[in-house]
Amino acid sequence: MTAYRCSECGELHDETDIELAFRRPDAYFQTPLWRRWWKSRATSSLCLLSGKRYFVRGILELPVTERPEPYGLGMWAEVTEDSFYRYVDFHDSDRTQPFVGELSGSIANHIPRVYADTTLGIPVTLHRSQEASTTLE
Image (tube, rainbow, N blue to C red; front, side, top):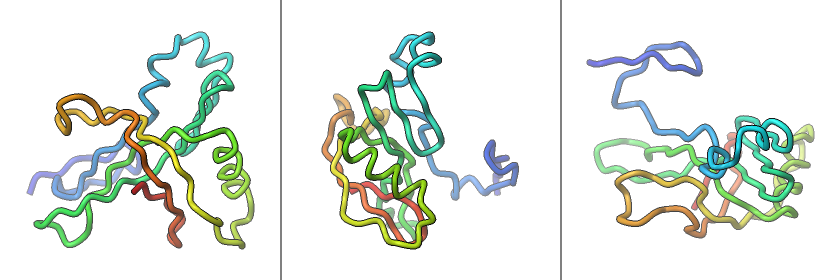
């Protein structure tokens, strides 16, 4: 068994349990550093770029025949301003009420070696699960 130490939790994980995750949407790194510092805000699950672009992080679940559970790919979706603030309102609430509805967006990360061109801009729907994670579909 080959194991790796997780940069998030510090625990050792078997290499078959490791899943790819993007820390920020691709557009974040294409934004000049001064603008990111001055006009942008980002957390582990939300990103606002220059007050004009809005992103929510979720998990794209991919079925893999050799695994008992889907492979989770942590990635970002660009959403509308209205959807972003609707999600923020839920995210900042006490979460006693379920998140109502779905959010539409588009994939905001290029997944290397998946498509010949790019995965950027592919339409997705975000769903909130009972386990407090957001999945992309």
